[in-house]
Length: 309
Image (tube, rainbow, N blue to C red; front, side, top):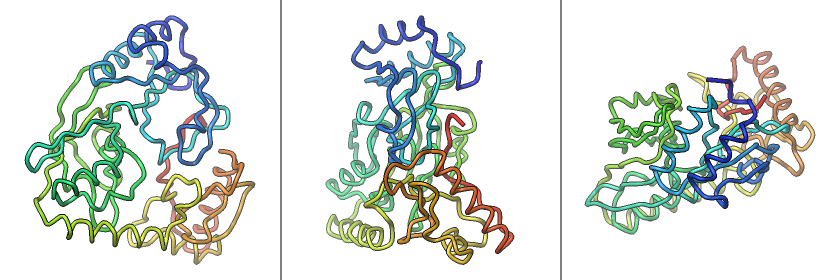
């Protein structure tokens, strides 16, 4: 397979257009429209499959052409280069977004947002996904990253995930085989495209579920810079530390590079104050890493995925 950042052959784009339809293949599409940072240059082709079978067929076509596709949900944990991306991006958000309720299970397509899934769980009196109600992103992204917040994470409620392998084969991965750990999964390592997940939740009083969701929302809104474009928490939590406190203690809160700033509301977030470039964000991340290392001797590892650099 060729590296990701290789131009998409015209023959591949023609085949993808046949598979999903011309209106579902966006050429030279700005990635800034598809990331919560609102940053990123154009990708050669963005494909929007409408079914799990279409998604598998798209992956097979890319594999046959020797192109490793970029896999994107809502782009909520992503920084894309100002130069953009060569090749093909496959986006499931808002296209593959169906959620079915089967007793205490939710059978979700990967493009469904965490907020949408949490709302459906509430509607049916099912508890366990409240922690994710305010996490920007999709079920697919949550499965890949083992998304978590407020003492909950995806692995605690997932029964299985449906995936497409890099060769384009549809497979079911059990919770045990997913090998979830902090912000990590087997699917991430293997380059799988998650197209769906089955969640096993617990029946509960809808009023109690709503009260927990409201409490978490208020805590997020009071502490996090949700009113500004960002990619969520910028750094992973170093073992034995809190990322935000390390950044604060090193004097980085409010630090800016171009349009990128360490949030004055929560030091764990880098925000786009307006017109920030990927280069600005990358420069700010490096500045924070250097200052924290100098002040506390702790290596700060970005949680944000970085494409095209």
